[in-house]
Length: 114
Image (tube, rainbow, N blue to C red):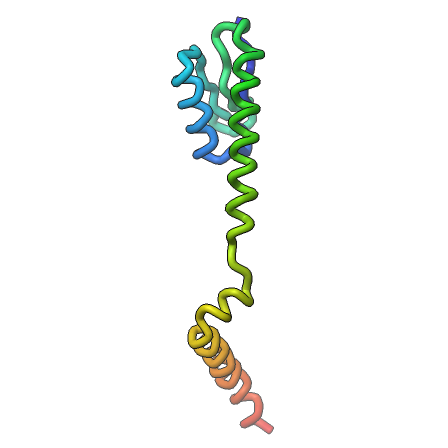
């Protein structure tokens, strides 16, 4: 009997592709259902053989733990605003100058009316 192994609703495409390749790499037979034309059905990856459920869920949990760890590491490397300002001070001054110029041209007509 078919068993739901992984829900695909709100899952990024790269994660869904990784899950598919994980199952294919372990020679696990599965099929996939879409959300349908109106998006109200259950999109998911279903196992053809229900006996593999525990093994597959353990594989998916290991994959998701590794993915979460990699995501946390990549978030730690993301530069902050102050890092960007220190690395590219000329660009920051240019952007601020451009913003001031735009504000000047937006406000100038109102001062000429007075």
